[in-house]
Amino acid sequence: MSDRASNGTSGIRKRLQDHWGKFEYNKSRKIENASDGLVTGADGNAPEVIDLTSDREVDDGTDTSETDISGGDSSGGTTNSPSTVAENMVDQGSSGEEVTFPFRLIKSEIYDKTTTSEHFITLEQIFGHPDLSQSWLFSFQYELDYILPMFHEETRITIVAQKGTILPVTQFTPQVSTLLKRMKTLLVYMPPYACHHSKMIVNQYKNGDCQIFIPSNNFTSAETNIPQQIVWCGPRLKPILGKPQSSLFGSSLLTYLKGYRLDLTTLISALEELDFKQLDDSGTDFVFAHPEVATSGLALLNDRLQNQHHAHKRENYMHHYLCQVSTIGSPVKAGLRTPGNLFTHLMIPLFSGLLDPKTNSKTHTGRKIYELPDLKERLDANKIKTYIIYPTDQEIRKCPMGYMAGGWFHHHWMRNETTKKLYMTLKNWSVFYKLQPAAGSLRGSTPSHTKFYMKSTTSSLNSVPFEEVDWLLFTTGNLSFNAWGSPSSKPRNYEVGVLLTPRGGTKITVSSAEELVYGKFNGLGTVLGGLQLRNIKKVCVMVPFNISPAPYSYSDDSFCISSTYKELDTHGHSHQPQD
Image (cartoon, rainbow, N blue to C red):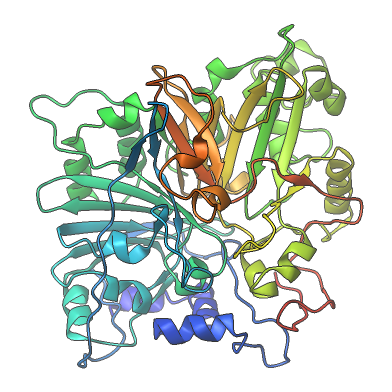
């Protein structure tokens, strides 16, 4: 290991080793132990399995290094033989419409041992493609003993990671040793409370084609298998013949990559030669957060949604805004007179057109830049309904993995009087919703580590929101100021995502994983039946929740990881506070 990398071993690294080290690196044994509840804390409480996105580094700046992170000597062993990844699925529906399915549910070795579906995907399929030449990985956590055996030994791997978030190899095989010799590690140094939270894979194949994947999970075994995870699978992109064409998706992706102070020349050069027309034509855009890029995060998303404003229009429509995340950050104070929630107090007012930060404080003397007095009344007057899907403590307690599944979910609403007051305000506004799993669901109320933001319009009380959407964002960005920044300030995190909007007659529809993967009709597109116009293209987005979620009852409360829960979970464990 290089001196610089060795000196960079940090508190994050130590916590990663402590926590993920509780899981056996032999994959089948590790998951069986977790499923059977054999991995327990010393005090008999639920094991502490956490998402470390709130941790911080003391170093600033960035560094590029060819790092040996092997951590020991080579020894013999067996190799893995992963299957190949399927192409982006397209189905010709029963009534003639073409339906594309770019989202897959990650198959869990805990919940899905006996289940098969074309809507599943595994990391082995992505990393182990026999024609894979190079793979660039962006993530916040890496467990190399878990992911490296999935690659063929001739694959060249580049890892982009925050310093201190890589667990080195401890189990060597000739295959892994060969991969390590070729592997390049690019380290990003983050300031306190910020993190390299992006999750993205760019695969280049032997024929020059590239494919982009955005998973909701970091590259560790526990995170891949315990909470629910979904992957956006981009189409195979071919090198363009002749002069490269302008592309909104491609331009945004390259802007994100060029913002790194790292040597990503090979990746950027490969992407500059690609034809992104498939993505542009389907209404897919790349939306990101980047602390070094002027227009990113909330400023970028707000710019992309300028044509979606509807406030103050005298129309008999209901406007539904939904957010499903794994973390709800601290109350937003900047630009508001009273601390508010990022989604309800800033995002929705911006995206709907209720708020124009450029004129708000100028035209209203004494008003702060993002302040909207009587916000709830304004939302109601403009027929805006808000949904925040976040697991309750009861959902966590009763899901198949119990409190262990709650380790990735951070909403510290009990922390102080300010957080409690905002939480109770939002609960009184009836914005919180549950997953609403189907009876007998294999995954039950297992929470999802995904982050979805979407907007739907309905014209009658009988219309079902979110069957079809005006726009939808799948991203790594949680509901926090660090992830998004504001219209006038940069985000602190690195985040990536895809924004889908109807374009050229293409509709964006939404269906639950319960329907697509586990339902009676789990073939391609069959659950989307009903009366449809012929030959209308649709992009179907798979989400890990019922698109008619259940509102919190009076007795429901959001799971608060920093609180004590004495009630025992499905494995007989209680929950002790975690930061």
